[in-house]
Length: 187
Image (cartoon, rainbow, N blue to C red; front, top):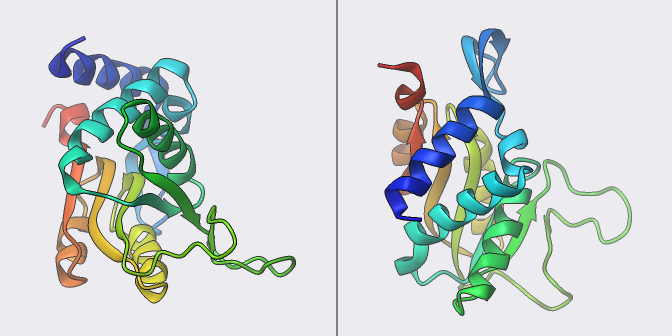
């Protein structure tokens, strides 16, 4: 399937499985009359494969060591992309940042790394399913920076176009998206 056909097919899946109208309160606290819940797309076999393929293609020239982001949205994405990267002979390891460190066991804020493994000096992309203001991705980026990682890019599957680009610029975080909300809203 061509890249444009894959992108069109994924947009259809998102429209069917993950887009809706109706008043909702977003993670940012804002109210909206539309929403995107990408989990049904990320957990659908075809949706997961297309998200991984299109994201891997978009990131392939970044020379990444790791891909990850804030739980829960980044977990299925990072895992699918890590698996595909292995199959494409261009391995990118995955991790995730907990919203708050566990209060038991290893008490990790960043999880998925084996004992002794570190993000220090590693090139990292932060992934996110849906971005509104960018707060979740900025939180993940701060944890990665504290661990010594180098944030190459924040990459979201869908930018709601409600301030994230400006907030990422202010935080000195390069930002790109696979889709923009306007593509689904007919703007």
